[in-house]
Length: 89
Image (cartoon, rainbow, N blue to C red):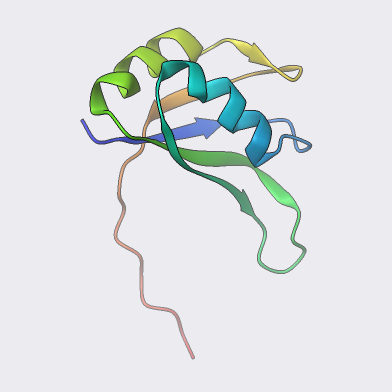
């Protein structure tokens, strides 16, 4: 298992700082990336959180998946690296 976590079904007002605080109880948070729409800059309702220790990932997923955060039930799972298709010029 890697150290990157997918966090879905986020409130559109959720911030990186809020996610950092939520996940920091499981260990050192290396990075938080709230995904936004390229054209509008609006949040898309999901994010990726990277923890320093892979052991912390399983615990965070187990404890946070399905839990309510900022009015929404989170979907938390291990992030899967998907190959990106080449961008058209």
